[in-house]
Length: 208
Image (cartoon, rainbow, N blue to C red; front, side):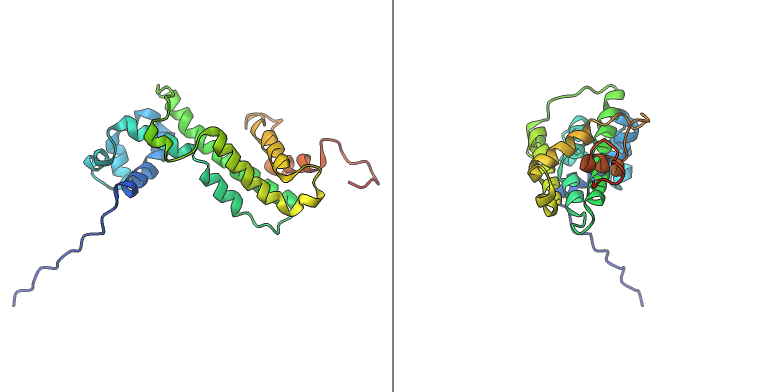
């Protein structure tokens, strides 16, 4: 008796938006490593798809690079990390974790932007289609500041400033730290300590 061939079910198709997100996710590590020199064939292999699939959702390589840059600049990754920090941690620990999360966000943006720039691609205005996927710089910073203010909310009564102002001050300290190779750069925990207690060492026997 001849067996019937097994019928293979095709996986459920992705929407164009889902396919774009999948391709961008696969492309970002390659762009961080190789910049604009990365090829669509390499991206396709990393995504496990045919190269032609890329051009079904992107007009060309330039549009793919723009989409990856826009994705790296999105603030919601950082906001989710801030919102996931337990509110019952001591204030210094919460701020240290926030500093580490935001530093990772900055590193992500810097890796993509730096690699593209080093490979010869100059910054362009974000296309209208990509602007709709994220926010401008001011809106992104406001969202991050709001998430940090919420993280500081349990300490509102003990802060000298309203939580939104305190969050802005902490971000100012964080974003103006020296380069990571500079020995003067503070770790996240040290930055939190200086922010909360100032640069002066405590006087022996005095309350902090």
